[in-house]
Image 1 (cartoon, rainbow, N blue to C red):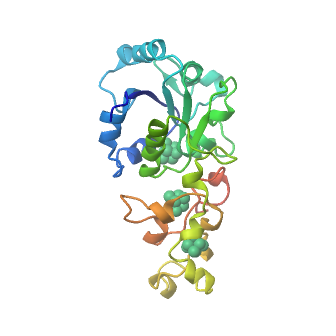
Image 2 (tube, helix red, strand yellow):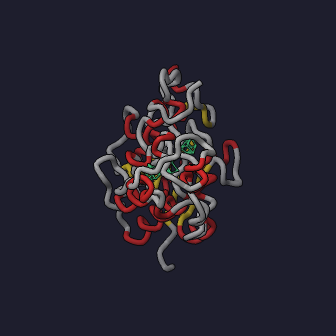
Length: 267
Ligand code: SF4
Ligand code: SF4
Ligand code: F3S
């Protein structure tokens, strides 16, 4: 409570904004407490009152005032093709804004599968050359915390920020750069349908008897056995449910390349 609020610049590249939509639904802590009491959200295209040149000027002010001491949170990614013309912010390619803000930050948080892996806009043949943050040429050697998921779980997002503010360090990361505390187990490891998997009881088609009985969704394409995320432990909407509990297989939305690996229905 006595710590100064750490400045955060939250940039948006190619994305759908549902990472922000997830974030504002955090129940523990409430997103409003994070934004009003824990961080100083100095710039966020979707959550700020300022607009136009005034908004862009805030980035320069923050860099000047807090050089090396602010967190850069990135939602979405830059398209590198055609000199970045597929995503223009304030009259310039998003890539420029990203590299400039990254140069002076303390650490980068890559929100969601867009910033962490590329996501659907990077799907083959990736015409805009959408590129995840850690692979952008010229990105400075700053710590990058990947928080993948499409979107990430709200409480995972706010917990990562809370951890960084409380302990004044970045959380322990796995080999892929994800916080171990939320990404070290597979959805399958804690799935409540797991006893049915072990017993060989599977849903064979949507709405069959097995589906009504809550059997395992593996034969419906569930990617839970290869997906590292906290959905089966923390769940969504304040712990209410998660895709598998709603009767649908996990599509592995937090895994690198899920969009090109047959997770979606084919026609
Ligand atoms: Fe949207 Fe998914 Fe990208 Fe987040 S990771 S901005 S939810 S497409
Ligand atoms: Fe594993 Fe998916 Fe079956 Fe759950 S529904 S036990 S995650 S295969
Ligand atoms: Fe995504 Fe699978 Fe969780 S689809 S939301 S990682 S259950």
